[in-house]
Length: 109
Image 1 (tube, rainbow, N blue to C red):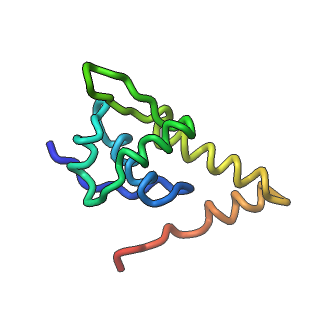
Image 2: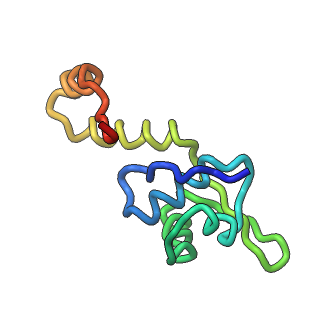
């Protein structure tokens, strides 16, 4: 089954964010070649090595091939971003209230 190109994970450079998003959508670990079938971009191996260095992706070697998977699911990753942002806020409760009362952005209108 072909996966649609997911929206990139926020908080990362676009290529890394897109690779991570593909891994989130996959039902099992993927090879770099499998990831590349979902992305019209080069540099996937470099993005994977950067994601591994950041602790966001793990790799399991099978024969001569690595299979990659995300360390955290999308919701856990996003919760970490929200927590980090709230640590910067003078009034975290006010920031949350504002964020929760803001309508979602509509990209396709």
